[in-house]
Length: 368
Ligand SMILES: Nc1ncnc2c1ncn2[C@@H]1O[C@H](COP(=O)(O)OP(=O)(O)OP(=O)(O)O)[C@@H](O)[C@H]1O
Ligand SMILES: [Mg+2]
Image (tube, rainbow, N blue to C red; front, top):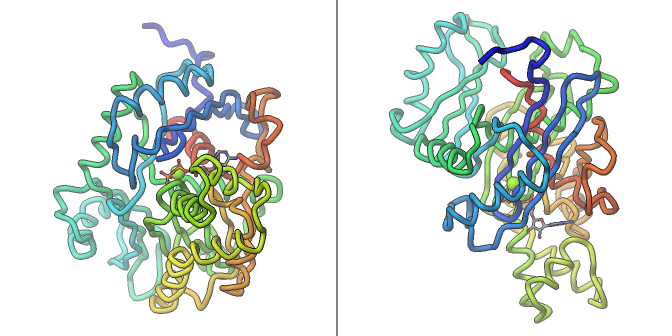
């Protein structure tokens, strides 16, 4: 086939296969600002994916195909991601060396840090700080269980798509956050660069999905600590459903902000008690930061995912942890074609946080 230069691909399709919703987003990178040109979202039945595990493959494959059609996406190449306990992200210190040599050495290093058999994982790494003194460097190690990555890739292939990159949900959230926060006023702070971003604010990025919550604590553009916990919107919905003896669908509406005639104080109470596991996850992350000597506290938390708009949650967590919590808007710094969100256009603010992972994936330029 002849490849014409002006046919060069300028867009990326992000495919976020969530346990509740499949999202597909195509971003065109040819302009100054990334621009969403196609979008599709498709709800999955609760039994299709449970805690990141695919229970009904065909439901998910059909869901991806429908999502693609709805979005009007024609490119078959996608960037997707995995998450959950089978992904391990760790910061390690090792002898200073060139990235080419590190490639080899990282395997030996990983064996000491990863609780899985090294032959069973896909490894990747990034040098965070080239020189931390004593001839050492700081490296971010990412390991994902091979069988899970392979399963995700084969699921995508069965949906007749090509997985160009398999990323990690947490990093997609970070990518989206950084693009939005820095796109207008990005200035390279040379002092911060020299210190590996250590003079910058410590920010917690918390993506609350249907079943899994991704916690990623960053400073500058480096993650200090990344962990996925098995807490999600589903447990809030179930608690509301039980407490008020209402249907799953009604409880889902409450979670999205429609309280109907339910008693506000009682809803707040149920949300507060349902937040204990999430709060514990936040506390543990802070303890970990302190123990590692990375930071004393998180200075700001940015929420995303379907759980970001759970009524009262932002305030409950702010009060409990004494940290400023805000809700991420992944559309703030990027463009989108008019009408691209179809039926969701009217209610864009409410669905925007759900799109964070999908947008973060589609923000990866082809080949990067
Ligand atoms: N406006 C909304 N529209 C649709 N779902 C919403 C909305 N607001 C909140 N939700 C809730 O968000 C949840 C889905 O969030 P999200 O898309 O982040 O999760 P997911 O990616 O499917 O799950 P996971 O990442 O855990 O596998 C659903 O359970 C839904 O109840
Ligand atoms: Mg998700």
